[in-house]
Image 1 (cartoon, rainbow, N blue to C red):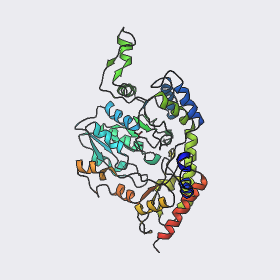
Image 2: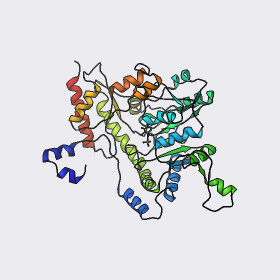
Image 3: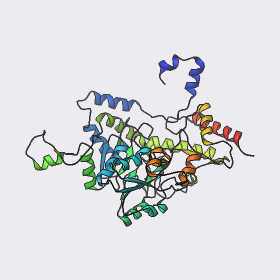
Image 4: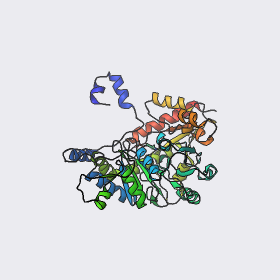
Length: 411
Ligand SMILES: *Cc1c(COP(=O)(O)O)cnc(C)c1O
């Protein structure tokens, strides 16, 4: 909300606007602004020295061998499927409980997304249900680390190995998450991160792929910029800088130095951002976990009780709660509306993809196909969670939730 806009509105409205607690807010500080201005005053705006520096920093942060910064997480996922030559006739297994990107990149390749229901503890794809969906055509699995909670990469990796499948991780929510005592992105699979403004760190728009395999890393690099191989001219030609060869059908998915300027400063603050997110999540649990009528992913309770699986850590991208409709007589949509009226922005992550008209129409999916994802979706609300959320705002969110639950509890 700009100053000009709010000063032009009547007092009462202005108060209301100031009071509104948005669902999400990014945190851009003076260091980010300085770094962007420095780039603007430099001779390089697009992919250049800062993009390279950001990739180096990210590699060190995550602990992977290669990091290819790209224009979005969607682009990163798309390129990962390209790098394995997944195409028409192939099937890729993923979760329906995700954003559009995860499945649309499978469609971009002319392959078929095959959904597998989620685990009610983590809301991640249920490894125990993957094998029954594997066919002769299956080529890859795309697990999504939902809200930052790491998927069981061991179990998924074993299934992939048994059937010769690639694993591509959608880590849009999981920058800073850990599995097996190591950061998500370090386990070898191509892993796609997002720097969209709602995510744990932002470059305005942007993404990155972490990977350990040299050949896939090289392929991703070439595909990210028109399929042009600079190494080819370095190695094979005597021509000058102007010469290039197109070795593959590539894309215009490069990451600019302006994005990198933001990324360099945001990455430096990421651990502090994530620690703050975790702190706020703990307060939500302190206050809400024993409220009759509310439920949470079981993973939250385990974490709260200090019993999260050893070596796992969530980046706390989301904090979600579920209405227990055996105990409260208000549905999710109405609850969201009431929160909005009380000045609190929320969201719903996610509308299961199989219920979206495109996928329902194309593959004949319908309600009942993925019962757990559907049930969770029907009851779920994503609450405000970001470093700029103050404790007094958090207190207000909690108070309003408690009041609403009290009003609608079935006695
Ligand atoms: C945000 C998001 C993406 C897409 O990220 P972009 O950088 O906007 O392309 C992909 N998957 C999930 C689960 C997301 O939440």
